[in-house]
Image (cartoon, rainbow over all chains, first blue to last red; front, side, top):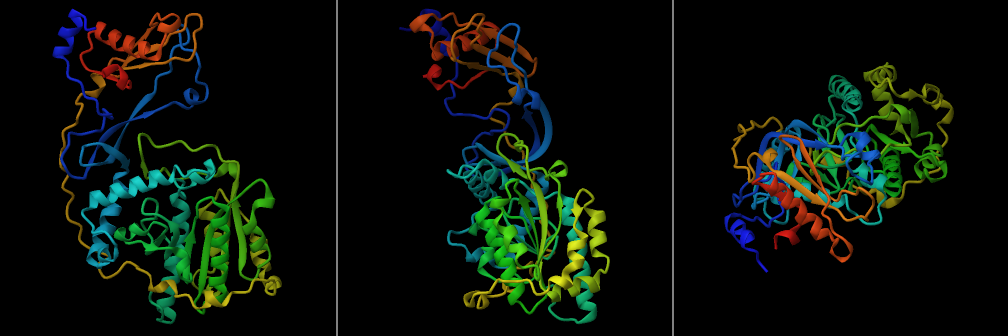
Length: 178
Length: 299
């Protein structure tokens, strides 16, 4: 039964029943979107994650997370929900490769038509997130989908590759694809 | 950063490579090649597969067969975990039994192992669990590739040592190659020989230096502007102990915390009561924008 003061409060209130990520979700645009902006990343301190007290009371207060600001490319569904983020560097790299592939005619080789860069990146993120939930795969295997070699290791091999390419052209002039 | 990168995805390929191979077919729209195992590896590749023993074994096997069958200089540098339990490192047996083509160049000890920051995430970048393994650096290559590398960069191993100082390099094993030239027991199957070479894959083509249109950095309207001014409530119901606080209200802007005992007893002590008490506490504290994770409380 509705109480009288409750009725007044309810008449003034606006309720949004849609799950919302308050710090990134945007109002609906009807299109897939990418927005590069400064976001607040909530980070649990390591000691909180490992030593979380099961009991919170006046003496054992909850440990609060830290907020870190970072630039990120936020990827949005048409309804404005953020489905993931990526570093701006990765986004621009994907944008560059997307345009190259388009000009090289590779977009004609895919079964369903390519709509736009934002929708393709959204699909990429959703597939990646689905892959991280593969049943029966071990935690180590799932995590390895996100583990990437440090840059300096790749860079070390770049030196060989360059040397080999230059060496090849100078000595033989064959197999220019090297 | 080497010519070709195998077993990666559009989310983690290296920006310096010429071409990359992904397991996700749709990555073609980002210039990827599909399915590294569909073609013979040729020339110089880097391969950092996911930690799935079957896939890692297949990678070593495919690299080995490619090096054996190709007339081109073919070398694949693999980075593979070395599990503590040696018996499950199937790929190591393959390396050990084919020293003519396979060399463990070195390893990065588990205490010095690091990873690049993830390039994408949902919510927050995830923290990885602590690893308990070292990582082997394995070269699977034919003689032509070794010769080409030595000609082009005679001190390549020393260069590698300087560039990746955290690794322990097994120089002796590499130098002992002349004595191990006969060690190989792997036979390349006929079907593999007929595979296409990966030089026909989609390498960066004539538009590699395509002029990028400037990014139109549109501004959008946040659904919850000033989200830090909101009050966030959450209730819990994990038992009843002395001084047990079962509802929390938090405002990020002021960092104000409020702990509430919903006062439920017996059958009235429910999670919905806790959640509603949190919302009531936020209203009592004059918060006008409140977020809850309880749909039941709003319906």
